[in-house]
Length: 254
Image (cartoon, rainbow, N blue to C red; front, side, top):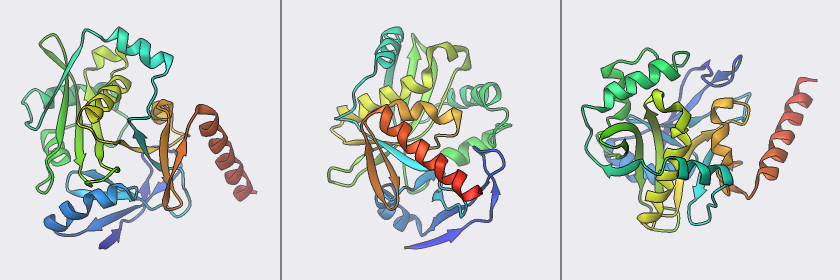
């Protein structure tokens, strides 16, 4: 397999940090063949690009995945399911004209300070489109109204490591009080289990980024670092790891 390294650029998640990516370089056929293997090595897809962080001075990003058959609901997650029990979901492989207005509203209201602002249709299509992979869309409805979409890749490994990869979720910001980001992960867990798959890959977890803290609340979970997956059973383990990393940073700055 061949890889390229991007130039450094401002980190989208940690102020004052720079980011660099390791990008897989291959044909469409090779990308489709190696994608499941790359996902298990901490990579992620956006459009046609498969990448993972390759930052020389920072190791804050960890790929995170949920072993869905071991996942246990927390009290707050149970309350959320009960709160949103009137909502319904369905899966489809076909996009809808209703997606872009929902995405535009979401980015404008929730991420005006991010790299995806301002939204536009071309950006949206390039973000979703992939000639060598067809994502699954988990749609959520309040009655007949589309309120959320989770763009999800199917990871076929033909063994116990197969699953879904949660690429991106966008939702109606008018429903912010319903915690749809967390709720949609719970729905993806449900659909992963329903298809007898084993893992839900959630992309990257950065403990120092408040926008990502919700991912660490799904337990148990596994994180990829030092070239292997490490399991975290409870919040105490997560907290201890964050403390060790902060101590290491302090030592490096001395």
